[in-house]
Amino acid sequence: MSTPAYTLITGASSGLGKEFAIQCARKGMNIILIALPGGNLSSIAHNLELEYQVSVKVFEFDLSDSEILKQQLHIITEQYAINFLINNAGVGGTSSITHTSLKRIDDIIMLNVRSTVLLTHLLIPHLLKHPQSYIMNIASMAAFTPIAYKTVYPASKAFISSFFLGLKEELTGTGVSVSVVYPGPIMTNSHTSRRIISQGRKGKMGLLPTPEIARIALKGTLAKHPVIIPGLMNKVNHLLMQLLPLSLKMRIVSREVKKEIPFALSV
Image (cartoon, rainbow, N blue to C red; front, side, top):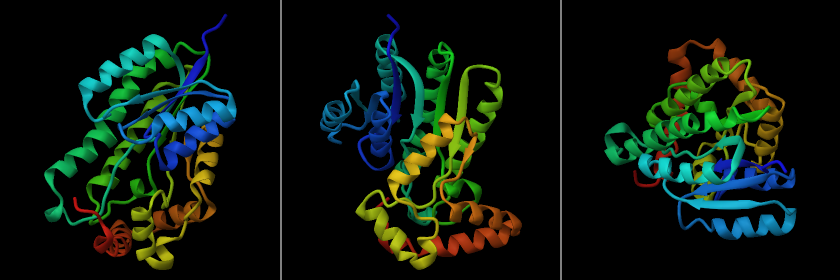
């Protein structure tokens, strides 16, 4: 009897990560959910198992703690075969660099960059054991342009874009397919929604429902598309922005992002 395969999803307790869990379960995939403690993950897993008759395993820990990540991943890979990795966990924020704490900067780099690379590096040998496996990485439209008042976040997403597209090329000829998803604004919670609404009509350009973003991302990844930009408006915006000089592009985007600052949480 063959060992059942699992899809591992990070940041799975809410927002896009939770939607990935729902849609993967709906497709009949067994899943491993990873999130911080206190995110009601066990309840989510229980409901998915009941509704879709799949196996759902829960691991609650801080991905940004490298030692704990390595320990937990060893436990996971000892017990479960993984053929799909969804790197969804990430954190951002809006504030001027002088009003951003060093801890917040470190949090963004440790979670968005270090933990994502470490997790992927540790899982690649296990993904290679399968005839076909997948890595999906959630970047952002912000990866395409440096942005004032965010600075660290778009830089971290640009890293994700560069790293995983390079990795895709490196793994060509193996059974591992690598995709990078560049969603636009996502109304994942009330705080994020206030920030998006604060930008007016421009802020809501490219806005898609979270389930639709997850559907497009999963469909594109399983079809082995390396670059996935959900939504026609986001595709058009990306093409138009490529035509602008970098200085003008940064000025336009940064001016709109600055409107978010009054709605930002303390960083």
